[in-house]
Amino acid sequence: MVKLATLYVCQSCGVSHGKWSGRCESCGGWNSLVEETIDTGPTSTKPRARSKTSRGVAFHDLQSSEPPLPRMQTGIAEFDRVCGGGIVAGSALLIGGDPGIGKSTLLLQAASALAKSGAKVAYVSGEEAIDQVRIRARRLGIADTHVMLATETALGPILDALKHEKPDFVVIDSIQTLWSDALGAAPGTVSQVRACAQELTRFAKKRNCAVALVGHVTKDGQIAGPRVVEHMVDSVLYFEGERGHQFRILRAVKNRFGPTDEIGVFEMSDAGLREVANPSALFLDGREDCATGTAVFAGLEGTRPVLTEIQALVAPAAFGTPRRAVVGWDNSRLAMVLAVLETRCGFSFGGKDVYLNVAGGLKISEPAADLAVAAALVSSALDVVLPPKAVVFGEIALSGDIRPVSRMAARLKEANKLGFTTAIGPVSRNSKETERNFDCTIAKLGKLSDLIDLIDTSESIAARE
Image 1: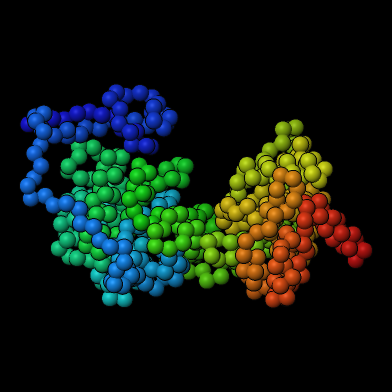
Image 2: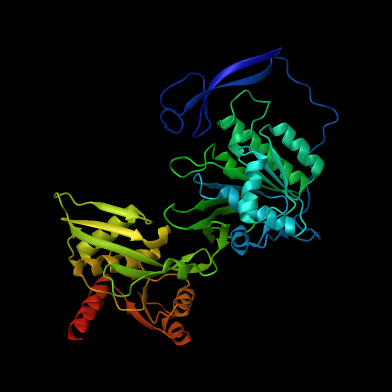
């Protein structure tokens, strides 16, 4: 006889509770407990006997004569870059992003590109009808490719069909719409998402088939469902972008078969997503050299150097309460830079509003952007233009010192490519060798006060001219 039990499962951490409460005792989330009915199995309490035909675990040697896992090249260079050089057979990918950002479009284009190369590809949608997927394929110009389409949300029939067809690459759109009849919970709950992801990952490993799972995100930007799903899969990718901008960024936060923190840049158009071979030129498009409060930051996104414009505006506070608004950067990092400028350099921002923006909608997390932010703030506060054709990078310490950054040569090479002739950065042991290799002038700064002197010198030169 089947015995059903009612539990209250937290949708944030997945911990089960015997009764409902407003706050989860495990993660502290409010109003996150949802009632679920589960099957606890037979009511008999007798211990189950071990099967006589069960086998033990088979161990293998670490060394092997077999070749490494092959990678499937989609032909979309930005997508392959983020995956570490291509999709590994038998791997499981989890792709998350805001609604309407282009997750389904990207995976449909990748599935079509793999189908053109001769791979057997299946696309299973739980959110759209087959005709709706075909309409998007015609708009993208890939309707003539041989991609097997299906619309199903039940996990059992999906696995049976995949075992029969034996595809090389499968897209599941999305994991939150699937449900397993082994559980009594509703689709999208923690139990269903965990169970469906586990079965699909097991299928990928056993059948040597790459599986891409589309995941919804919460209002905080995290993939909805239990965090254990991110541990199950081999790669976790986030598709980011602002609706007011035409480009999208694919970012890897976990990759067992390649580097993390790698990005791929795409441009959204009427015909789908297009690759951006030179993102620095895209982020600096339309920039004015004579604007105050702007600085060009030479940063790194994974292995790729990217130049972006950082804009700052320092204005008197309208109602006596200063405001701090940041877009594309860490708010606490800005507070630290402002504190160092006030304490070590004598700048007062107590009665002024400070607005900081990374142009183009790119999100920067690298500490090397500290000096570029400080340069933009000082430029806006003094109403002075920074030296033309100059890039800025460097990490600021609480003591006011400017610390060296990694891969300085790669940053300068990207700046040279786009016509920048001056670099404002920290003192490095290899700065002389780097300056000889690139056609640029490096203004070496040891303390943050040296940046103030450099900007004051630029102001006096501009006044004489």
